[in-house]
Length: 246
Image 1 (cartoon, rainbow, N blue to C red):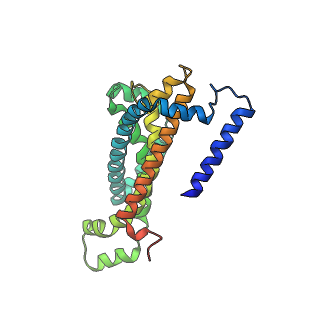
Image 2 (cartoon, rainbow, N blue to C red):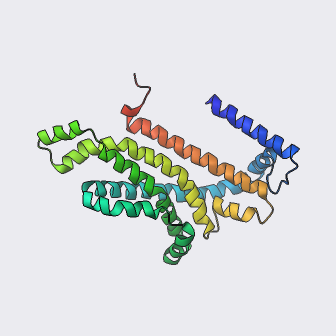
Image 3 (cartoon, helix red, strand yellow):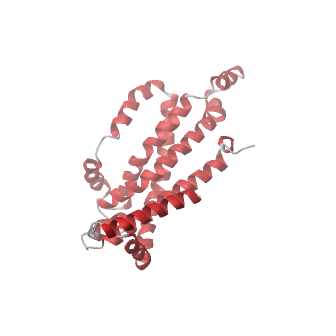
């Protein structure tokens, strides 16, 4: 824990030094002490907007896990469907959101539904890929044992394949929560009245660059908190993957 703090302190120190010796305009790059001042002065504004973004991220990630997990198991159970759909899933990640955003707004309006749809689209792919890969690499000896015991396809899936895929699914979820924050910010760019993305969008034209950077810091801390929480959940849900087990 000390090493990241030391590295962060060095980074902030280098940032502060650069803003002093380079004479860069604070509108372009505010020094860290101004960002810290904004974090304190605008704390109520930042927290109220964080609650909006956190709701979008939280619900969106849960939906992405459900959609991604269900899709992964469906494709695993149907190899022909997997061969047909997998390339389409990969290509879907290349579609720019500037193309999808107007369509989602047309369908859902400026409600939270459009923002959740964007978060789900951003997040579900890593869940699908990691879960599918884990399901495809289950220990063959375990599958052979289940066939020897005359287990049904559902029993094999429930007792062997699903537990084997859970660590990978949680790894995909850890990736998803970090990109979910980006997805939520972009979703708020498409049209919103609240949220850290909206605050970022409006702060710069108002010459409140330090506030925009403060919002970015809050977003980064939020993403780290989500990633850490999922890491702790992984240690509890799949303890057999812990490297520190005796």
